[in-house]
Amino acid sequence: MENIKKYFILFVCLTMLCLLVPKNSAAETLSVDDMLEAMPAEEIIAVECSTGQVLMEKNSAKVCEISHLTKLMLALLAAEKLENDELSLMDTVTVSAKANSMPAPQIWLDKNEKITVEELIKAITISNANDAAVALAEHIFGSLDEAVTEMNCKAKSLDMISTTYADVCGLDDKTLSNAADTAILASELVKHDILTSYFTSWIDHVRDGKAELVNLNRLVRTYKGITGLKACSSSSAGECTVVTAKHGKMEIAVVVIGCTDRTLCDDIAKKLLDMCFDVYSLYTPEITDDMLEKIPVLLGEKSKVSVDFGDVPAVVVPKGSSDSFDISFDKDKELSAPVKKGQVCGKLECRYGDQVIYSADLVAKNGVKQKNFASCMKILLNYLLKI
Image (tube, rainbow, N blue to C red; front, top):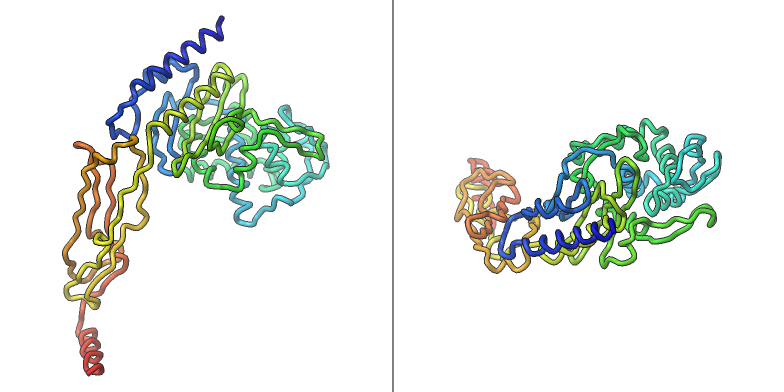
C-alpha cells in the first residue's frame, strides 16, 4: 500500500508538472518548484550539458553526502589521463593491501593481484567497486592523499563550489557535494567519449570472468540516447542517480539525490529527461554572409578589417518559440584606425517579447594599425612600382 501511495503521488506531480510547462515562455528555468517538491527525493536538477542551463531543480544547492557518485570525479581524471596519453587502458596495476581491504561493493581483488586499468575503470563505471577505485587512484596518483588533492583541485577548476572530497570512494562522511555540482561534473564527463561504452554497459565481467558487473542504472537498457552515468544507494545518501542522454545536439543531465526508492528514482529521472527533450531545443541564430562582410577602416594600414562572431554558443529555448523571436543586428559602417583585435564592432540580439534570450558580439578578427609616414611611403612606393 505504501508503494502504491508513492507511485500515485509521483504520477500526480508529474502530470501537473507537464500541465504547468509554459508553451510560449522563453524563460531559461521552468517555474515548477511546487511540483518538484512533491517528488520523493531530497535534491533534483536537470541541465542541458553543452550550455549549463538549468531547466528545473529542487533543493539542488543543499550540501549532502553523495555516496558512490564520488567515483565520477575519479573517472573524469582517469579519462583525462587516458586522452593525454599519461595512462593506458592496458597498463597493469598491482593491487595494494589497502585496496584489498575495502568494503563492498567490490570485485574481490586480492593483495598483489595484477589487473588492467581498463578492468578497474569498468568496475567503477559499470559498477561501484570500492577496491577498484582505490587501486586505480593509487596507480594514477601514487597515493590516495594525492588522488583526493587532485579531485578537489579539479572540482575547484570546474567551479563546483559546494564539493569537498575526503576519499575516492564516497565512504567518508566528509565527502560532500550537491545535485548542482554533480550536474556540472556530469556535463564535463559527457565530453569524454572514451568512457561512454563503459557507462552505458549493462553487464560485463572482469578478473577472467570471476567478477560480474551489473549496472544499477537501469535506464541504460531502456532509454533512447542514453550516455551514462551512475546509480547508487547508501544509508546516508539514499537512492541516487545521475543520468545523461542525448537527442540530436542537445544533451541533458538529470541528477536525483536522496530518493526513497530505486524504482521511483529511475522513474523521476526518465520523466524529467522526457520533459526536457519534449519541451526544449537548442537554438543558434543564423549567421548570414552580409553580417560577416569586412568593415572599412579609416586611416588604417589596411583599408578593411575582417569580422567574426567567434564561437556562436547555442541557447536552450522552448520548442517552436524561435519563430516568434525578434532578431536585430547592428554593425559599424566604418572604423577608425587603430583597430584592436577583438574590438567589438557589432551585436546580434534575439528578443522574445521584452526579454533578451540571446546576444553575440561581432568583433574584429585582427588588428589594423594607424597609417604613419613610413607606411604611407611604403604604399606610395608599391603604387609607383606597379605603374
